[in-house]
Amino acid sequence: MKVLLRNPRREVEIAGPLRVSALLERLDVNRESVLVIRGDALVTGDALLGDADEVEVRPVISGGAT
Amino acid sequence: MKCRRCRGPAVIELRRHNAAFCPPCYTVFALGQVTKAIEDFEMIEPGDKVLVAVSGGKDSLALWDMLLDLGYRADGLYLGLGIGDYSDESGRLARAFAQRRGATLVEIDIPGEYGFDIPGAAEVTRRVPCSACGLSKRHLFNKAAIDGGYDVVATGHNLDDEAAVLFGNVLRWSTEYLGRQLPVLPAAHGFPRKVKPLVRLSERETAAWCVLRGIDYIVEECPNAVGNKHLGYKEALNAIEDQSPGSKNAFYFGFLDKASKHFTPEAVAEQEGLRPCTGCGAPTTDDELCAFCKLVGRMARAGSGAAS
Picture 1 (cartoon, rainbow over the protein chains, first blue to last red):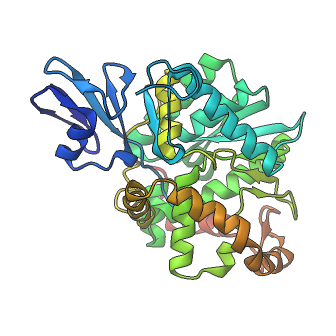
Picture 2 (cartoon, helix red, strand yellow):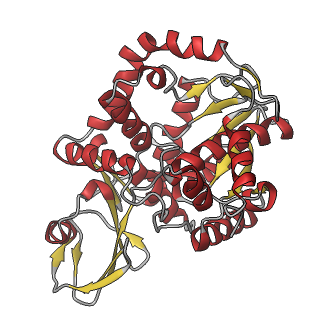
């Protein structure tokens, strides 16, 4: 599957099938700090991702000291 | 995974609530959290005219969207900070949202109106860009609200923001800041009321709101914020949250319930020492010019720090 990562923006190819929770572990990403979007839909940690899926791992942490 | 409310397929899991939601039920959940925050802390009265500080990011656009959904009279305020492509894109997204919702967006362009930009200010003052940025935002939000006759300024600070600021203030025992770290600051001494209706939502939850509602927001981090202390605190707290869901909520709301009141006398004393700035009339603790007028003057003298 194609996985889009941000900050910096890049794409990686990862073999499926794989659950979202396993994908985040493999990428060493804290599940509290991202949303996972398949196509244009949010998916939960137990969703099974296939080889043909396009997935975005979108960081949600932002902010300056305001 | 099933939705806690309707048992349909869930799209978002919230471990700290031991819950998952489908899109329609998530909308109900998130609006309920914002309504509870507004009511518990008496943030907005019926009929209040609200000015939402809008950056083009997920939190401020989600907040504006939710306040409009809840029926509040809410206009947006966008500040052009002059941070290159980042500002261009965030301004475009704020305008697109306003147009889509048929809402009013007030705009202030700092380079155009005050002759400097945030990167230039950081260079001249030799401080981190977030310092001049935060100072300018606080001053101009207040000014725009007072000038525009708004009752309240609403900002998109979420649970993660508040927990991270609290974490930093506790690490250094910055008691003068702890005394005013509240979800509502009442109108006083020439300041409008300031409220943070998203304090019951994490930033993952505000981002989910935007994705589910189809709100286009700026995902890339501000280039000036990358690597700052605030982001480091958030990472540390999320590492704890991953092991123990609900920790951020317990940390922040526990502070408000049990500790905040011990620090308020210091904040009240500081408020009572305010006097009008001799340049713009805004309240300040300084003897003559407020920090923003000093910054504008310093940038004018530097010349080379003018908008690029």
